Length: 132
Image (cartoon, rainbow, N blue to C red):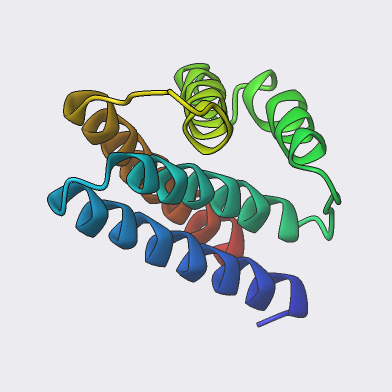
């Protein structure tokens, strides 16, 4: 396995860890923390894909923009994933930085479901890309 493939695998494992943490936090009614971990699951999954190309960015916005341009606009990933990324980023930012932001259980649960779906889709993509 190449170095880029190892890095992609490592980042995807880290994404799944965040996804599982989000689910546990949701169960404990820690909704703000759950959406934070759900966002980071998606973020790390995107970085796992980028690792296969040897591409990375210092800012979240760079990772998101590159992923959207090169993987969503090209049709590799469905456009619904762009919406998931945007929603996760916005909700995570609001819950982390806005003093009186309130997140409901169902919204947090949706973010956790989206993170799991995103990670599963990336897992399949990486498996297929590595097999080539």
